[in-house]
Length: 292
Image (cartoon, rainbow, N blue to C red; front, side, top):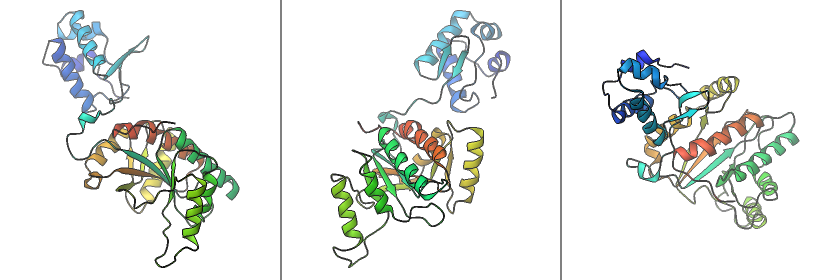
């Protein structure tokens, strides 16, 4: 973790007023010169380097805490916090606070098909607990991939009570009231009207892999998975992914963003990504969880 000691930090500060010191340090945090969780010098050390009173630096630290940029921990010093969640008024450019957030799964890597099915159902139930709005399933080839999304959705209706359920499988033109259309109608009935269609709203579909809470081993694995995807996946901290999405022309006007859980990952990996998507990435886009 890179940190600036008192001498190096003082060399970057030209203002000697508390508000000015706080503003310049805020700019260093935004530029990631002072990364998340890096520790700031002690009040006394920085005051000595700048030639100001200890009270001046204490006031600057107070400004930074009020802005949510740092926190002072007992015996841990003053450390940089993750960027504060965007507020609705912060969305001045393309995009707007995200209204709905969904996940998509092709299945979960497991020891056998039955375990993979159970893991998928647990992930959907966990997504509901986290306030995610929709869970979409798609069929996939290969071992333990979902071969019948509609059947899995039917099972999911018995494990959930609120989350919207959908599939990328489409009813063939001219099929009428037989086959897939009837199966989907059954899911809608079992779920109490929670079946959604991918064409009902303006969707943004992306593979996004936040690494905020990933272990080193997980992050290395995720980067290998992302590199092998046909389309470049968004991978990095939730703030970095949010910045990329807000600069994406397709994000403008999207009412819902659906984030794909990469295939070939196991339940622990999918759960970690789901947690970061719902508790970090979603809020960084202005999204709020649905009430239970």
